[in-house]
Image (cartoon, rainbow, N blue to C red):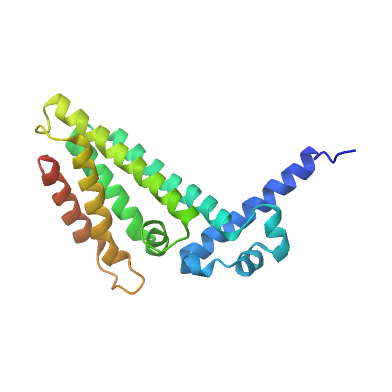
Amino acid sequence: MAYRSTPRTEATRLAHRERLLDAARQLLAEGGYAAASIAALADRAGVATGSVYNHFTSKQELLAAVFRHVAGHELDAVREAVRAGSGAAQQVRALVEVFSYRALRTPRTAWALLAEPVDPLVEQERLTYRRGYHALAESVVAAGVATGELPEQNPRLSAAAVIGAVSEALLGPLSPVGERTDPGPVVDGITALCLRAVGAPAG
C-alpha cells in the first residue's frame, strides 16, 4: 500500500520546511549566500543535515525559494506604497523612497537580492522580480503621461531607466566592503534624479 501523509505529518513537514527557510533568511541577512551552506542551514534550523534534502533537492533550490519569499515581500511593500500615492509624482517618489530606505535598513540582505553573484536558479528569480519592478514603474509613468501630469515619453524606457538608476546608485552604500552613510541624503538624491528623469515636479 502506498504511503499517505496524514494532516499531522503534513503539518510537521511544512513546519520543518519553514524552519529551514527561516534559517536561510537569517544566514542571508548575516553573511549572504556564502554563509548559507547546507550544514549551517541545518544547524541553525536544528535539523539533521540530510533532512534538508527531504524538502529541497539542492541548496540552490532552497536559496531560490528564500529569494522568492524575501523579494516578494519587498515588492509587495513597494506596490502598497505606490498604490497609496496620489498622482504620478507621488507614486514615483514612493517607489524610489520605500525601495531605497528598506534596502538601506537591511544592507546585507539587499546586497544579496540585488548584486551578489548567484547560481542560475537564483538569478532567474532575480530577473523575475526585477521585471516586477519594471512593470510597476512603467504603469506609474504611463498613467502620468495619460493624465498629462508627465510629459510625453516611452513609459517602458523611462521605467527601465528609473529602476536601473535606483539599483546602481544603491550598490555603493549596500556593498559589504563599502562605508555606511546617512541614508537620507542618498535617498533624497536618488529620488530627485528619478523625478527629473520622468519629468515630474520635485516638490
